[in-house]
Every structure is written in C-alpha cells, then in structure tokens.
Length: 126
Image 1: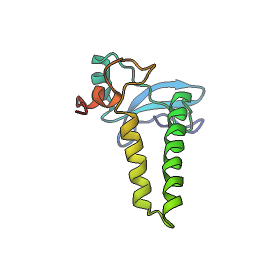
Image 2: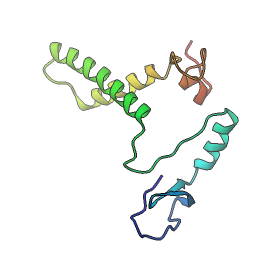
Image 3: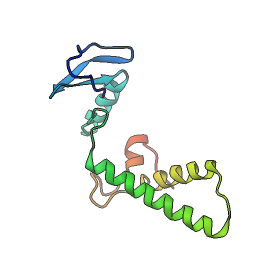
Image 4: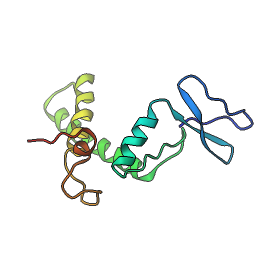
C-alpha cells in the first residue's frame, strides 16, 4: 500500500489503482497486478492484507527477526573458520534461510501437510 501525506488528494498514480480504503488520513491503494493475486488468494481462502509504508505487522516482524537470527548464527559460525565472508554469500544465506523456513509446514500454520512454499508455488520438495 501507499501512504498519502495528510491533506493530499487521493489520486491513482502510475502503477496504482483507486484507493482501497482511508483510515486516519492515510490512503491505502492497491498496486497494479495485486488484483489477480487477491483473486488467487481468495480461491485458496487466504486474505491478502496490504499495509501502508511504516505500518508494522507483528507476525511479519517476528518472521524477520527469525530470519536475521538464523543468518547471524550461520555468519558467526563462518567467521570462526574464515577471515572474510563475501556479500554474495550473505545474500545466499538469507535466500537459503527463507527457502528452508518456507519449505516446511508451520506448527501453527493453516495447513498440517502443506508448506507455505507448496501452497504458493504448487511445488513440493522430494
């Protein structure tokens, strides 16, 4: 979503559709291309919750902390054995951590058998 400054008129700019909702002076707009995603998620009975810039979602913040903790752990182990860790390797650690977290069903997730990755991509790890 996009936040509009207080008092600014809500106009759909390039890449944006008409405002979705207005709350306390904040105008939320839906980026182009998100409508098909909403329809696909609705078919799977998943609600897409777009938020404005600067708005925090506690569940997502917790997931971000989990990724940071795991990457930090891998990084510190590598630093014990190597003097320098290239930036490309750090990016790959973030990718791999996210990949593996999304490859298994969460204990409190919406499915006991399907991982988030399998639900969104339709592919399973063999």
